[in-house]
Amino acid sequence: MSGADEVIDPVTGAPAAIRYVNVVKTFGKQTVLDGLNLIIPRGKITVIIGRSGTGKSVTIKHVMGLLRPDKGQIWVGKDELTRMKDRDLRKVRTRFGIVFQDAALFDSMTVFENIAFPLVEHENLPYAKVKQKVEALIAQVGLHGANDKVPSQLSGGMRKRVGLARALVRDPEYILYDEPTTGLDPILTAAMDKLIRDTQDARPTLTSVIISHDMHAVLDIADKIAMMFEGKVAHEGSPEYFKKSMDPLVRQFLAGSLDGPMKV
Image (tube, rainbow, N blue to C red; front, side, top):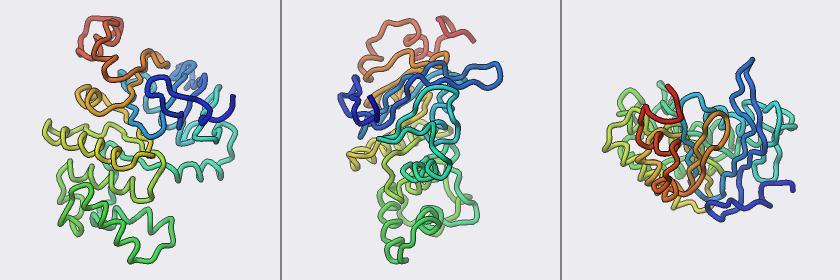
């Protein structure tokens, strides 16, 4: 079996967009990924959960080609990344948008300039086209009237919305969210969750991957949840599967309990 397009995700029934096959990654004597097998389905929201240090961020860095595995394969569409040259990996990265935990905005740039930056930097578009795309995204993420504000004038929730608009501006095939609701109050968290779900619903071919500890959001917006433990996917399923599961690992994590197989 070769590319990810030949594989169907058993949880959602959708074709695989990204696939990890027996991926191993060690740092010194520490094995972070220990035979990871994971399918990210196309056109769906997949949320990766698990305790800190279980390999969630390392998993995401591999699909961007920022890390290379010691063993195994990583497929993005029909491309297998592990033997790619850096030049080809850079082309793969252009198919991704990333929403960073802290938004990672340029402090000296306005909202408009931050969102436009990837277009100005990487695409030779007339200004009128850039303006049209950026203003459409500003409206979509609910930042009306914020075009000329700089990051220091924005709330945490607004900065995350700018980060999402910037990630979408080049129409990526895949979007990665790193803890998108960290630092937000419950109301802003609910608003961000809705925005993520609405963004996905408006782009049926977009494949979204979220790293999150926010279990309320996970159960509300995910199409698929993958729970990592000790460098592997310990459980995967729909939100309903996780809600109903009586597995001690799942119950402990959902409850945030000190009692269970995960030791502090």
